[in-house]
Amino acid sequence: MRGRSLAWELFPFSFYEFLKLNKINDAPLTTKQRLLIAKCFDKYFTIGGFPEVAALDANLRIKTHQEYFNTILFRDLIERHDIKHPKAVMDLAQFLVHNVASRHSIKSLHKYLKLLKHSISANTVAQYVDWFEDAYFLFQIYIYDSSLKRANVNDKKIYCIDHAFVTSVASGILVNSGHLLESMIYVALRRFTEKIFYYRTKSGKEVDFVVALNANTLQLIQVCESSVDPKTMQREFKALKEAMTELNLKYGTIVTRSEENKIPVGNGAIYVVPAWKFLLNTEKK
Figure (cartoon, rainbow, N blue to C red):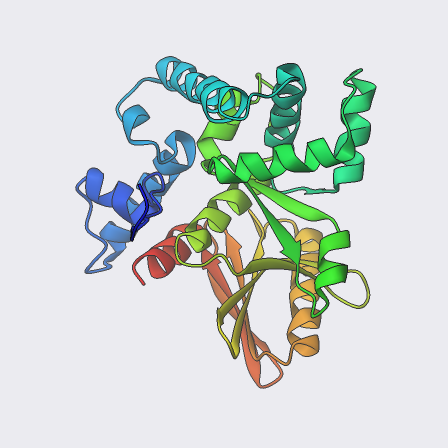
């Protein structure tokens, strides 16, 4: 039927919604409340946001996630688009889920499928990736660049609709927990905007997210699971500081698993924020 219609994007539970599900208030933020929220975040990091699995034990949660994965592939992709190479779609989906928060190109994905003896074109691979995004299963972001041509030819970064879903589908292979945290932060940002990019400085350093809040305001966000390793933290700090200089921004954010700090940078600052606080501040907006 033709005519006017309204569309809503419906995501799995946000962390704020997960708190409410567990009957935990985010205010007033007393020491005791902070501990409760941090503990609930650990639970959210393990369980994820799909409502059906919130009360399930670990084994049933994993089986349910895997059933979701198969349903998405067969109903939303293979059957809907009458795909002639269903095994290629499954292998591509598995590869991207295993490599969440990593950069990829259609050329590299096509080469990978060729190694698995799939006879499909690079254009078909690109179409599969677009269909993953249409199904709200996987998302890709572009490099931040004023040239649309350069943005299109550069590698994209891939994220999944739910971080815990990744661990359930990853066939028992250990997934980088830092990448899971990064994917979680992406989905929180994606709830309110599609204008999310990654940034590469002139010297080649990478910042995880550039978010266009409006026509004139950018936000730089780096995700670093822990600041315990000084070399890792210094690398993330240098990349963010360099990007702030190039984009003429006074402030930047490093999201960690639990650390909090404020680091002066020139006439601005880099805020180190625990993930639970970043999620609440973002999602409540």
